[in-house]
Image 1 (cartoon, rainbow, N blue to C red):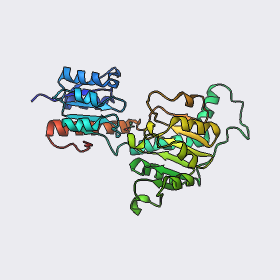
Image 2: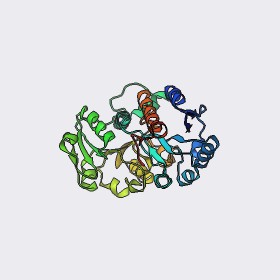
Image 3: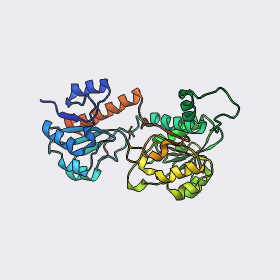
Image 4: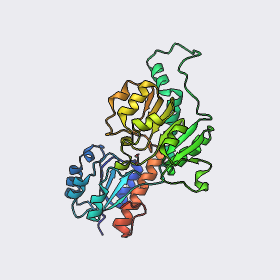
Length: 325
Ligand code: DGY
């Protein structure tokens, strides 16, 4: 029996591409050309190769127009990400196309990234690195680049899912007190002593560091807005490694400039890879290029999840293990 054709929109780790080529008739993108950012091109390529499955990634424009233009041959879209806000889920559902993601395997790595940003922001690591690289460091000084410690501070986790909880476990290691905000209170064995807040206002007024772990989409758009920033303590820190659109950039930039927010650490951006130019000149913001899941181990595990999902639909004819639609 002929192997199912898979259209792969991005270059993937070598071992994953090798496995894809064993299991499927995989049409790879060895140059990592960015044609996936144009959803109509994904559809045109899927049509040209008679794809049964599409392996796409965060940043690909799998919008309604792209999904509606896919050929009948496409039965499944497997995204190499846990987030699926780049895929028009309703359009896929309407066409009976299964959509899968890669949950769990990236929780620790993404929490590590949030933790990195938290330290960078609190300890002014980006500023320090820029100083050294610019050849402007004149030696140790008692008052140079003093940050704040995380020890004893209150970490507020917005979205106490797998990533948020991994971050909480790391933060307990530096003696932070954990607070969280979510749709509802979680059982005590999951909370592990973390303190639930019933209102945004009470949560924001309590914490010293806000770490955002909410999904993209209209429900969270510009969640961190001027009103919520004003509810935070003066000198608090903001971290976002979830989705960029959940922050109102203009408002955060104003709060960073005024000093109401001491520092921020961002890994994701509204409209990325575009980054709001207002962040660029600010010393008190650490900016990473969406590195959340970027470890060798995690990217391998994400690739294996995609293969499992594609094989379930196209070879075994069963419901994929990580189906979102
Ligand atoms: C995800 O998996 O959703 C990440 O943001 C991409 O690394």
